[in-house]
Amino acid sequence: MKDDGLYTIGQVARLAGVPVPTVRYYSDEGLVPPAGRSAGGYRLYDHDALDRLELVRTLRDLGVEIATITRVLADTQTLAEIAAGQIAAMEDQIQTLRVRQAVLRYVTTRRTGTAGIARVNRLARLPAERRRQLVADLVAEATRGLDMEPAFAAHLRSMLPDLPDDPSAEQLDAWLELAHLVGDPHFRESAREAFERHATDRSSGAEHGDHESWARAEQAALDLVGRALKDGIAPVSALARPIVNELVAVFAQAHGRSDDAGFRLWLAERIRIGADPRVSRYWQLLAMINGTPPKPDPVPAARWFLAALDPAYPASRERDDAGAPG
Image (cartoon, rainbow, N blue to C red; front, side, top):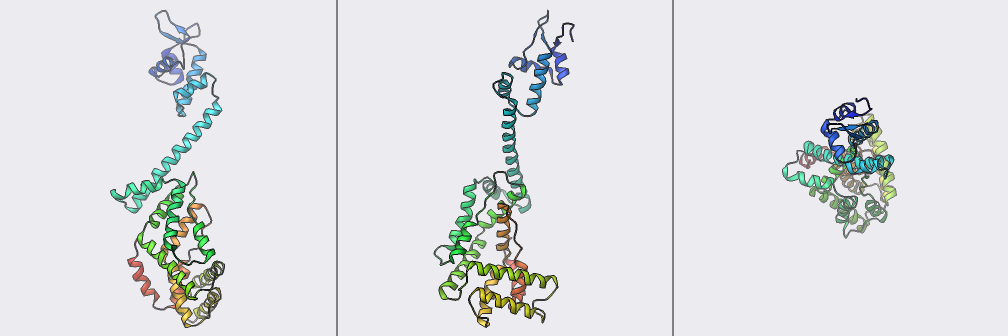
């Protein structure tokens, strides 16, 4: 430091912890103007210049652009305004990185090849309305032209993915898996088959229930079979019979039917749909995306109940699972 309280460019650079060329650049841009010149024509800086240099360095470390720093030093924009803008920009950058991470993680876990990575990337970046439309199209295709129970149809149409503007890594992963599932032709065929059976039952008079009564029966199955599974009760056993009879009675009431051999065959076929793990996974992923509490997985209970109604089910289930797409 010179006796007159001025610093050379090397001194001010050392005090601020930046390279000399950086100080020279900031000076040329008018951010840190020199206080004067030495007899030899070299730039000299005072305490105010050092303070400005430290402020510029700090703002640059925080990612603030030179043009914005110029406005701060000219008192045309406050530090609070700058900070708010930087936070918004950082949030956008973080979200971009999350999307990239989700795509790369999906490619890694699903072994997606070169042909699939572009599609995964497009799915990850879809806007909210397009994401909802993707699922809405599946529902529309699966139910088109069918006589659906009104409340059930309304429930299906309302259950659309609502990924937040700032989704978590788990929500992004769930969205990519859901989009893959929705695009799976085997899953789409299975959904269409299920709804066709529903419509056929309504038109033939085999189905007299409603969405609320079905939901109560399904909850009864989760509760009763859940306890049976916990207690280790085999579906084809003397201990299982009263549980099965109680459940069949509940489902018969929910569907407006009588408990007879024909109904039990009909019920077994309906439960077979609920034993499809892809259907269960679809609802789990939708809940994860929408941030709603996950529902219990109905597949274990459905498989137990189906095995009790149809002793041949376990063998056929293994064949189905072996042929199901991953």
